[in-house]
Structure formats: structure tokens, C-alpha cells
Image (cartoon, rainbow over the protein chains, first blue to last red):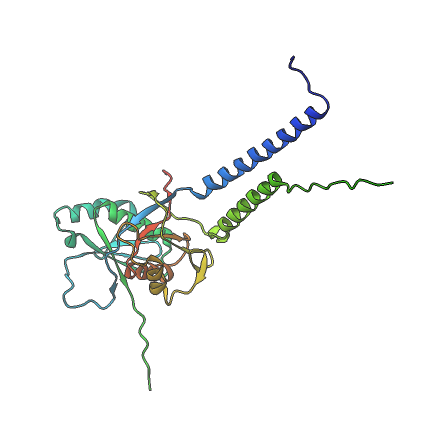
Length: 146
Length: 135
């Protein structure tokens, strides 16, 4: 039997099957596209914050901890203003002699109007220098006046 | 004269039905996916050291208006510790990832409190950031 254009009832059946197969292939395509887009891998920067400290330091707080304070645009290291570009180098030098993890704790004090974009850059520099970020969070206290 | 009754053969359209079922599955799959955080508007900050993380257990977002969302649902900061603890459950270390999607202009008054509460809840924080472009 020669292969050629089918006509009549056979052709209609072939067209019907082709229609179904195309439909199925299209559905499968959509299914895999949806599956692929939902399993997209997230990218992020891991950060370990051991514990948060209140502004009122307890008596056993070690004074030799490195302190980084930041405002909206500035950064200071142990009370001295430093450009953000130099922070990593200066911190690395300070932390170089400290071997124990508890000695590498860097207390970060942030002004309330500091934007996140600035904060993440500073804390990234601290971590890149080998420091462990610890936040100093101010606690609002309600005082009832009678 | 006797008429012969024609027999009606009603065959359910199985192929068509399977197609509809498959389409419905796809519809609900897409709908479930749409209920994530795609409607929340936020811009990531730039930082170095971003790497691929697995699927986070909890996702916390602060949008450009300062609203806080836990897994796409708006929540308040007041009971954040309890909410994150409930989401994390008894998950072992390494599986307690909390993805923080904080809008780049959010002020410390908001995000520091959130970070402190996640830390208190025992979450392992991962900041969603954009790789810093070289200047």
C-alpha cells in the first residue's frame, strides 16, 4: 500500500488523533513550565545573629568587644568614624589577634533611621572581616506616671 | 408496520474528560502558586556574598510601605516571635531557614526589631539580596 494523503474516514480519524496528541503535548508543556518556575532556587546571604542585646548592658558584658555604630550615612568603629570601604580592613586588623568566637563578637548599634541597604553593607563587611554580628536593640519601656 | 427502535449508544467521552481533569489540575497548581508573595512590592538591597539557599521554611517580607508579611500573609510585628516559632516547629538546625526579603529603604526601627524576633525564635536568617555590582 502506497503512502500518501489519506482521504475519507481514515483521514478524519487521523486528524482527530493528531488533535488529541497536540492537545496532550501542549498540556504537558504547560505542566512542566509551571513545575520549573515554582522550583526556582532562592539566592540569599546567610547571617548568624547569636542573640540580641538590650541597650542597657548587663554587668558581665565584656568591654573589649568591638563596637560598630552606624547612622543613616556614616559608620564608626569603636567611636571613630571610618569610610565604609575601609571598615573591612580595619576590622580584620582588630580581629586578627582574636581566636575565640566570643572574642570576635562585634556589637552593632544602629540609628533608627538607618536604611536596610546601608545596614546590610556594613554587616556584610563585618562578617567578611571575620566578625560575628550582634545587635544592640533599644527597648522601649513604658513608664506610667501617676 | 413495525418500526425497529434504534438503539442509542452513549459512550462517555473519556479522552475529553481526562483532558478537562488535567487542565483543572494545572489551573489549581497555578492558582496555588499565585498565592505566594508575587503581589508584594519590594526591592532587594545590594550586598556581596549571596549564595543559593534551599527552599526556606519561612519567608518574611517587608514591602516598600513598611508592611510585614509572613509567608505572603500580612502580620503585625508584635507577636512575630510566636508566629515564627509556630512555623518552624521542631525543625532541626539546618532546616530552620527564614528568608528575609526586606525592601532596601526600610528603616532600622522596623527591620532590626524583626531580625531580633526571628533570632529569638531560633530562625536561621538568610537575607535576600542582589549581588553587588562592581563600581
